Image (cartoon, rainbow, N blue to C red; front, side, top):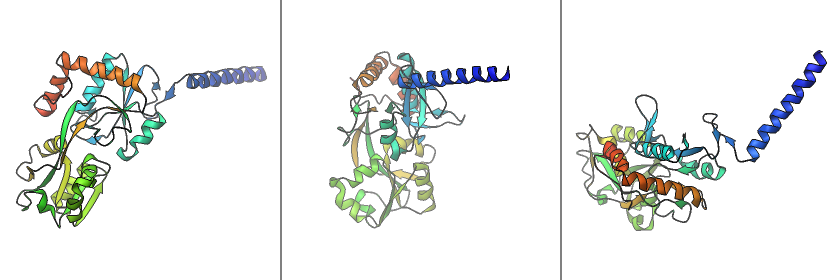
Amino acid sequence: MKKAAAMILAAGLAVSLAACGNEKDAGGTKDVSGGIEKGSGTFTVGFDQDFPPFGYVGDDGEFTGFDIEMATECAKRMGKEIVLQPIDWDAKDMELESGTIDCIWNGFTMNGREDLYTWSDSYMDNTQVVITKKGSGIEALSDLSGKIVEVQKESSAQSALEDEDHTELLASFKDFLQVAEYNTAFMDLESGAVDAIAIDIGVANFQLEGREDDFVILDEVISSEQYAVGFLKGNEALRDEVQGTLLEMVEDGTFAEISEKYFGYDVCTLK
Protein backbone atom coordinates (compact mmCIF):
# COMPACT_ATOMS: atom_id res chain seq x y z
CA MET A 1 0.00 0.00 0.00
CA LYS A 2 2.84 2.36 0.90
CA LYS A 3 4.49 1.66 -2.45
CA ALA A 4 1.24 2.29 -4.32
CA ALA A 5 0.64 5.50 -2.41
CA ALA A 6 4.14 6.69 -3.17
CA MET A 7 3.61 6.04 -6.89
CA ILE A 8 0.36 8.01 -6.83
CA LEU A 9 2.03 10.93 -5.04
CA ALA A 10 4.92 10.92 -7.51
CA ALA A 11 2.53 10.92 -10.45
CA GLY A 12 0.58 13.77 -8.91
CA LEU A 13 3.79 15.76 -8.37
CA ALA A 14 4.84 15.24 -11.97
CA VAL A 15 1.46 16.46 -13.23
CA SER A 16 1.69 19.48 -10.92
CA LEU A 17 5.19 20.38 -12.12
CA ALA A 18 4.16 19.97 -15.75
CA ALA A 19 1.18 22.22 -15.19
CA CYS A 20 3.43 24.86 -13.63
CA GLY A 21 5.78 24.59 -16.58
CA ASN A 22 2.91 25.03 -19.00
CA GLU A 23 1.70 28.12 -17.13
CA LYS A 24 5.11 29.74 -17.39
CA ASP A 25 5.39 28.88 -21.07
CA ALA A 26 2.02 30.55 -21.57
CA GLY A 27 3.38 33.83 -20.26
CA GLY A 28 2.93 33.69 -16.49
CA THR A 29 5.87 34.39 -14.18
CA LYS A 30 6.09 34.78 -10.44
CA ASP A 31 6.68 38.22 -8.99
CA VAL A 32 9.54 37.67 -6.53
CA SER A 33 8.42 40.55 -4.32
CA GLY A 34 5.06 39.09 -3.40
CA GLY A 35 4.45 35.75 -5.11
CA ILE A 36 1.75 37.27 -7.32
CA GLU A 37 1.07 35.51 -10.60
CA LYS A 38 2.05 37.95 -13.31
CA GLY A 39 0.32 38.04 -16.66
CA SER A 40 -2.49 39.88 -18.38
CA GLY A 41 -4.19 40.51 -15.03
CA THR A 42 -1.38 42.50 -13.40
CA PHE A 43 0.39 45.78 -14.02
CA THR A 44 3.87 45.78 -12.46
CA VAL A 45 5.31 49.25 -11.93
CA GLY A 46 9.02 49.75 -11.24
CA PHE A 47 9.86 52.73 -9.03
CA ASP A 48 12.44 54.19 -6.67
CA GLN A 49 10.99 53.97 -3.16
CA ASP A 50 13.24 56.80 -1.94
CA PHE A 51 12.05 59.47 -4.37
CA PRO A 52 9.32 61.54 -2.68
CA PRO A 53 6.84 62.88 -3.60
CA PHE A 54 6.72 60.55 -6.63
CA GLY A 55 7.36 57.24 -4.88
CA TYR A 56 8.25 56.55 -1.25
CA VAL A 57 7.31 54.70 1.92
CA GLY A 58 4.63 56.54 3.88
CA ASP A 59 4.32 56.86 7.65
CA ASP A 60 2.06 53.80 7.62
CA GLY A 61 4.80 51.70 6.01
CA GLU A 62 2.96 51.49 2.68
CA PHE A 63 4.20 52.68 -0.70
CA THR A 64 2.72 56.04 -1.64
CA GLY A 65 3.40 59.12 -3.78
CA PHE A 66 2.08 60.99 -6.77
CA ASP A 67 3.17 58.49 -9.40
CA ILE A 68 2.16 55.57 -7.18
CA GLU A 69 -1.39 56.90 -6.86
CA MET A 70 -1.55 57.67 -10.58
CA ALA A 71 -0.36 54.17 -11.51
CA THR A 72 -2.69 52.50 -9.01
CA GLU A 73 -5.72 54.35 -10.36
CA CYS A 74 -4.61 53.60 -13.91
CA ALA A 75 -4.32 49.86 -13.17
CA LYS A 76 -7.78 49.84 -11.56
CA ARG A 77 -9.36 51.40 -14.63
CA MET A 78 -7.56 48.95 -16.92
CA GLY A 79 -8.94 46.06 -14.87
CA LYS A 80 -5.47 44.99 -13.73
CA GLU A 81 -4.02 44.30 -10.30
CA ILE A 82 -1.29 46.79 -9.43
CA VAL A 83 2.06 45.32 -8.38
CA LEU A 84 4.40 47.96 -6.94
CA GLN A 85 7.98 46.84 -7.46
CA PRO A 86 10.71 48.96 -5.82
CA ILE A 87 13.95 48.80 -7.82
CA ASP A 88 17.52 50.05 -7.68
CA TRP A 89 17.42 53.02 -10.03
CA ASP A 90 20.71 52.13 -11.71
CA ALA A 91 19.29 48.65 -12.47
CA LYS A 92 16.04 49.90 -14.01
CA ASP A 93 16.91 48.83 -17.57
CA MET A 94 17.79 45.30 -16.49
CA GLU A 95 14.51 45.04 -14.57
CA LEU A 96 12.53 46.18 -17.60
CA GLU A 97 14.36 43.98 -20.10
CA SER A 98 14.05 40.89 -17.90
CA GLY A 99 10.29 41.36 -17.59
CA THR A 100 10.36 41.84 -13.82
CA ILE A 101 8.47 45.10 -14.36
CA ASP A 102 6.08 46.32 -17.06
CA CYS A 103 7.11 49.96 -16.95
CA ILE A 104 9.16 52.60 -15.14
CA TRP A 105 6.87 55.18 -13.58
CA ASN A 106 8.58 57.38 -11.04
CA GLY A 107 9.53 60.90 -12.06
CA PHE A 108 11.21 59.36 -15.11
CA THR A 109 12.78 61.90 -17.47
CA MET A 110 12.34 61.17 -21.16
CA ASN A 111 14.70 63.89 -22.45
CA GLY A 112 17.86 62.36 -23.87
CA ARG A 113 16.33 58.88 -23.60
CA GLU A 114 13.75 59.18 -26.37
CA ASP A 115 15.15 56.25 -28.38
CA LEU A 116 15.82 53.94 -25.43
CA TYR A 117 12.22 53.24 -24.42
CA THR A 118 8.67 53.34 -25.74
CA TRP A 119 7.21 56.37 -23.98
CA SER A 120 3.83 57.68 -23.01
CA ASP A 121 3.25 61.34 -23.78
CA SER A 122 4.83 63.62 -21.20
CA TYR A 123 2.46 64.21 -18.28
CA MET A 124 4.54 66.75 -16.34
CA ASP A 125 7.23 69.39 -16.82
CA ASN A 126 10.14 69.46 -14.41
CA THR A 127 13.28 71.49 -13.78
CA GLN A 128 16.63 70.65 -12.24
CA VAL A 129 17.58 73.00 -9.42
CA VAL A 130 20.27 73.46 -6.78
CA ILE A 131 19.67 73.44 -3.01
CA THR A 132 22.14 74.95 -0.56
CA LYS A 133 22.17 75.93 3.10
CA LYS A 134 20.88 79.42 3.82
CA GLY A 135 23.76 81.82 4.33
CA SER A 136 26.17 79.67 2.33
CA GLY A 137 26.99 82.55 -0.02
CA ILE A 138 25.89 80.44 -3.01
CA GLU A 139 23.34 82.48 -4.93
CA ALA A 140 23.93 81.44 -8.56
CA LEU A 141 25.29 78.46 -10.48
CA SER A 142 28.59 80.30 -10.96
CA ASP A 143 29.02 80.34 -7.17
CA LEU A 144 29.37 76.55 -7.22
CA SER A 145 32.93 76.93 -8.47
CA GLY A 146 35.25 75.23 -6.00
CA LYS A 147 32.31 73.62 -4.18
CA ILE A 148 31.29 70.01 -3.54
CA VAL A 149 28.04 69.16 -5.33
CA GLU A 150 26.05 65.95 -4.81
CA VAL A 151 23.36 64.17 -6.84
CA GLN A 152 21.52 60.88 -6.81
CA LYS A 153 23.28 58.32 -9.00
CA GLU A 154 21.69 57.88 -12.44
CA SER A 155 19.36 60.82 -11.74
CA SER A 156 18.19 63.51 -14.14
CA ALA A 157 20.30 66.04 -12.23
CA GLN A 158 23.43 63.99 -12.89
CA SER A 159 22.57 63.71 -16.58
CA ALA A 160 21.87 67.44 -16.82
CA LEU A 161 25.17 68.43 -15.23
CA GLU A 162 27.12 65.96 -17.35
CA ASP A 163 25.68 67.10 -20.69
CA GLU A 164 27.70 69.29 -23.03
CA ASP A 165 25.77 72.43 -22.09
CA HIS A 166 27.23 72.32 -18.58
CA THR A 167 30.80 71.18 -19.26
CA GLU A 168 32.38 74.30 -17.79
CA LEU A 169 30.07 74.34 -14.77
CA LEU A 170 30.84 70.69 -13.94
CA ALA A 171 34.59 71.25 -14.38
CA SER A 172 34.44 74.14 -11.90
CA PHE A 173 33.27 71.92 -9.00
CA LYS A 174 35.78 70.89 -6.37
CA ASP A 175 34.09 67.50 -6.36
CA PHE A 176 30.99 65.93 -7.91
CA LEU A 177 29.56 63.11 -5.81
CA GLN A 178 26.82 60.55 -6.41
CA VAL A 179 24.80 58.80 -3.70
CA ALA A 180 22.14 56.10 -3.83
CA GLU A 181 19.29 58.27 -2.56
CA TYR A 182 18.49 61.91 -1.84
CA ASN A 183 17.87 61.31 1.85
CA THR A 184 21.60 60.67 2.15
CA ALA A 185 22.35 63.80 0.13
CA PHE A 186 20.32 65.96 2.51
CA MET A 187 22.12 64.50 5.51
CA ASP A 188 25.42 65.32 3.80
CA LEU A 189 24.28 68.88 3.10
CA GLU A 190 23.06 69.35 6.64
CA SER A 191 26.33 68.08 8.11
CA GLY A 192 28.43 70.26 5.82
CA ALA A 193 29.98 67.31 3.97
CA VAL A 194 28.76 68.85 0.69
CA ASP A 195 27.95 72.42 -0.33
CA ALA A 196 24.99 71.84 -2.62
CA ILE A 197 22.59 69.27 -4.03
CA ALA A 198 21.34 69.19 -7.63
CA ILE A 199 17.82 67.80 -7.67
CA ASP A 200 14.38 67.75 -9.34
CA ILE A 201 12.22 70.72 -8.33
CA GLY A 202 9.32 68.50 -7.23
CA VAL A 203 11.55 66.47 -4.92
CA ALA A 204 13.24 69.67 -3.69
CA ASN A 205 9.94 71.30 -2.71
CA PHE A 206 8.81 68.15 -0.92
CA GLN A 207 12.07 67.79 1.00
CA LEU A 208 12.14 71.47 2.01
CA GLU A 209 8.62 71.56 3.41
CA GLY A 210 8.98 72.80 6.99
CA ARG A 211 12.73 73.31 6.52
CA GLU A 212 12.63 76.60 4.59
CA ASP A 213 14.59 78.36 7.35
CA ASP A 214 17.56 76.05 6.82
CA PHE A 215 17.80 75.56 3.05
CA VAL A 216 17.20 77.55 -0.12
CA ILE A 217 16.58 76.71 -3.78
CA LEU A 218 18.57 78.83 -6.23
CA ASP A 219 16.48 80.89 -8.64
CA GLU A 220 18.76 79.93 -11.53
CA VAL A 221 17.85 76.46 -12.83
CA ILE A 222 20.15 73.90 -14.41
CA SER A 223 17.74 72.62 -17.04
CA SER A 224 14.11 71.78 -17.83
CA GLU A 225 12.74 68.38 -18.75
CA GLN A 226 9.60 66.28 -19.11
CA TYR A 227 8.37 63.26 -17.16
CA ALA A 228 6.70 60.29 -18.87
CA VAL A 229 6.04 56.58 -18.35
CA GLY A 230 8.75 54.39 -19.89
CA PHE A 231 8.02 50.95 -21.37
CA LEU A 232 10.24 48.32 -22.97
CA LYS A 233 11.16 49.40 -26.48
CA GLY A 234 8.42 48.17 -28.82
CA ASN A 235 5.72 47.59 -26.19
CA GLU A 236 3.31 49.99 -27.85
CA ALA A 237 0.20 47.98 -26.92
CA LEU A 238 0.64 48.52 -23.18
CA ARG A 239 1.79 52.09 -23.75
CA ASP A 240 -1.37 52.87 -25.70
CA GLU A 241 -3.56 51.30 -23.00
CA VAL A 242 -1.92 53.35 -20.26
CA GLN A 243 -1.91 56.49 -22.39
CA GLY A 244 -5.63 56.22 -23.07
CA THR A 245 -6.38 55.65 -19.40
CA LEU A 246 -4.32 58.68 -18.37
CA LEU A 247 -6.29 60.84 -20.77
CA GLU A 248 -9.53 59.58 -19.18
CA MET A 249 -8.14 60.60 -15.78
CA VAL A 250 -7.37 64.06 -17.14
CA GLU A 251 -10.85 64.47 -18.59
CA ASP A 252 -12.74 63.49 -15.43
CA GLY A 253 -10.50 65.54 -13.11
CA THR A 254 -8.80 62.64 -11.31
CA PHE A 255 -5.34 63.66 -12.52
CA ALA A 256 -5.82 67.20 -11.18
CA GLU A 257 -7.16 65.89 -7.86
CA ILE A 258 -4.10 63.69 -7.25
CA SER A 259 -1.79 66.47 -8.43
CA GLU A 260 -3.32 69.00 -6.01
CA LYS A 261 -2.74 66.57 -3.16
CA TYR A 262 1.01 66.38 -3.74
CA PHE A 263 1.95 69.67 -5.41
CA GLY A 264 -0.82 72.12 -4.57
CA TYR A 265 -1.65 72.68 -8.24
CA ASP A 266 -2.37 70.75 -11.44
CA VAL A 267 0.97 69.73 -13.02
CA CYS A 268 -0.65 68.01 -16.02
CA THR A 269 0.79 68.66 -19.48
CA LEU A 270 -1.33 66.04 -21.26
CA LYS A 271 -3.74 67.33 -23.90
